[in-house]
Length: 231
Image 1 (cartoon, rainbow, N blue to C red):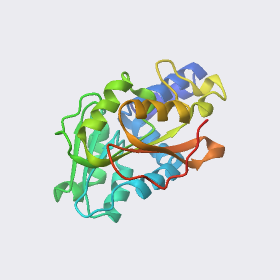
Image 2: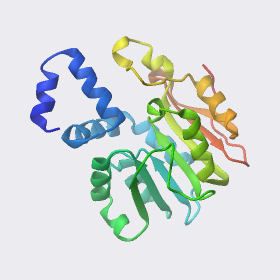
Image 3: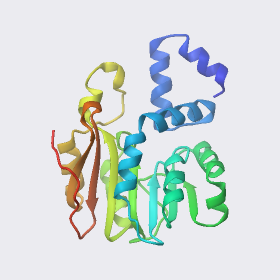
Image 4: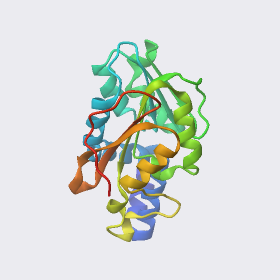
């Protein structure tokens, strides 16, 4: 979609605007995707910081970003950590954009980006030290499959980190809600992750006024010092 089409959609009806937002948040593509992912970089900056504080800092750690978008979070982590980075996203356009943004890391074989679905990831069992995702859980068609896959690819002791807006954020108004998406309270998401066998599952409050949280859980092992809350 080019910029003229974006302008045309915005200038027509609220319904068209809402459809555009829904489509691009779930699967960013084209110039519209570039615009929306840049906007998300700004809106989600606190979640990016929360993820950085929780991923493995071990030298050579393998870290996976599920739904990497334009690759901004991966770039920030690559600048600070001596790790090996992987990313999976359903949008081929985002793979192209993120590869360009992280060209040096990709060329040095310290970052590997692929197109694919969280419900069927092309990685070996027990491969990653950390798996994180930011604002993707609303779009999972089968959350049970997604969390099972995340657990499968994590090493024993590996950590899963999920940045998200709670259900209360979306329930403020119908304009924030989209058909086919699933929203979770902090309690609901915590219970779902625990059901899939993650341990020491906690919720970190990132910005309670904006209903912004970060869940962290482990495949097995050590407790975290994250602040805990339940809605």
